[in-house]
Length: 208
Length: 208
Image 1: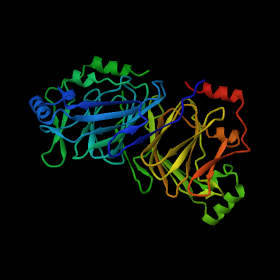
Image 2: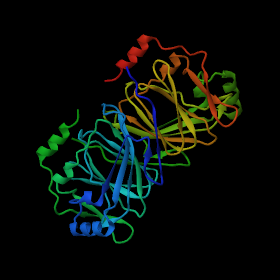
Image 3: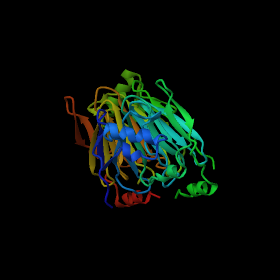
Image 4: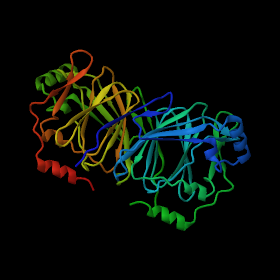
């Protein structure tokens, strides 16, 4: 029996990165095409800003074994595309009954959650706030503040991600937009297509 | 299908407690009888201090389902019993192949890890340091600093804890003791009884 060795990672509050990580990726504005309501505003922003990184993720993946855990940190820039805030693509877990824990470290944002049948929940995240994403909820994080949003996260190592679920419903049911002052509000997404009962049923089969 | 609702917990950096928790427990000096080398020093300390809380734990347990996650925060007071620091009882997971993630928030300490066949590893923990405890490692946290040690943690919901494993080997193989200055050092525990191959084999069967 070969045991895995204990490991240590250290999160930089300034950079939003993590030492000891086994993987890292970044998403630029241009990677978020198709996600925002105002596509022309996105194109204009990419042109004027030089397509900056919107968010990056450092993670530590000891294994993909059932029962093991992945952990990491994500940093998201503040900004807006028209009225909509910078956000992550969002996903549901490939094994849909796997949860996720997000732990706010710096900045302010929200976790936007959607149940398979289209119920929306919003959890506000700030420093030292934990958001527990239960099994089966589609989720995306949104930087509603003016500073970087930093979150530590942890989820089961065999969860996987299904990023297509939001694309197939033509976005999440609601959009998180600026309220015109310093806050956020929800608006309906008119393009949203409710999931068919057969697709919902399939989600509940993806468990093990 | 009833979905669990998203939840939020907020950690107090000052108190080391957490809002939104579903459970909480505290351990006093007198709960640590049998753990320290110098039993007379422990008895004397209990008498002079009025048996204070040494550490407390707030956790959030959404379910005990395989694939789900438990999270929480632990706060440990600084202090020593003779040369040994305040520490937790320590455990291995009842399903021994379950890992754990500890995330340092305040103070300084170490995670003491021991493999089933008696190898010791030490991971130093400070603010923004994560310790990944791999499957099968017995582990205990030790406050080697002069302030409260605060850690956020997360582990699979079906892990369980076996606290008896350390008792059965008459302690861990090493003791973390003060080096006489501001640091720590390891000394052998002369009472330690190595685990029999049959007990080690049983541990590797406790997986699912």
